[in-house]
Every structure is written in structure tokens, then in C-alpha cells.
Length: 172
Image (cartoon, rainbow, N blue to C red; front, side):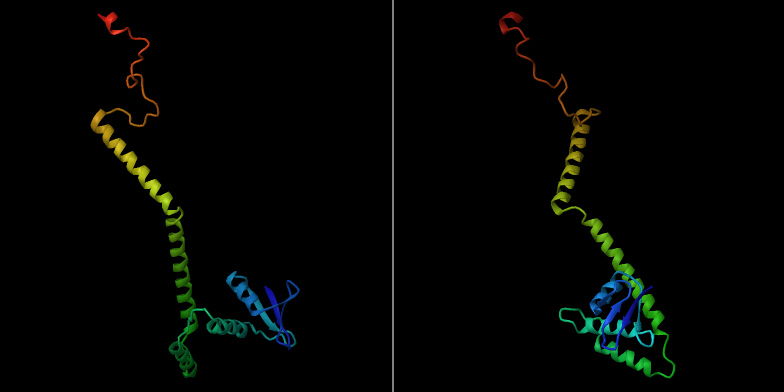
């Protein structure tokens, strides 16, 4: 597990990469699903939860960021902490969030499959399919049984060769 140390000067040090990191760097690790632990450099106390909450607070306050937690929801969280016996909310939220993210991923995959071609490519494919359909329909109606997918005309379809036919006066 990747270890991040937090020093008294509030700086975060990534022991794996031997460099100082920011909260944004840790947010990127979370998005990449890389597991890490933040510990106090002096005492060894686990500060991971506090750092994760700080990242969430920064995202909630960031400009252009969509708020995930409404004021009403935050007030409800505070009331839960004040209960004599708090509800087992963490497991419920974890499961609900996991299901929501899986559903979103499935929808994104379905959307990308549906849009794998450009609109012009999709129109071309539809036009080709319609053309094949009409060729088959016309072939079945006109030539019952003849193949409609010929690339070159047959000898019967070719125009007569004028050089091999005798002039009109010789045919008589």
C-alpha cells in the first residue's frame, strides 16, 4: 500500500515516489483507484479519512464543481451523529454509491457503443442496407431467382457487337 506522510508543516510526502504531493495529486490517486494511506510523520496516526474528507470539502467548494451534498443532506448527517445510536449509514451509502457508479459506467459503455460511428457513417450504413433491400426486392419481382449482386454484366446483358453482325442488306 502506498504511504503518504503528513508533516507538521502540513506538507504531504509520497514515500513511493519520494516527492511532495498535493491534495489534487491524492484526488488523482483516488480516481485511479490506487489505494494509499496517509499517516502523521511523527506519531504514525492514520490521517487518511481526514485527508479524504478535506478533498471532498475542496471539491464541494471549488468553482465550476457540481455540489454533491446539499445543505439539507449535510444537516441530516450532523443529526445522525447526534443520535444516541447512529444509523449504520456508511454501509448503505457505500453500497448505494457503488451501484450508482456501476450503473453510470454501464450507461457510458452503451452510449459509446451506440455512437461508435459518426452520424455520417451511420447514415451511409443505413443507405447501403436500404439499397441492398431494394435490390433484393426488385430482383425477386423482376427476375425471380436471378442473382442481384452481379458486379459485371453477363453476355446476355451485353449490347450486341456491331462489328460482328452483317450489315442489314447481308442479313436478307
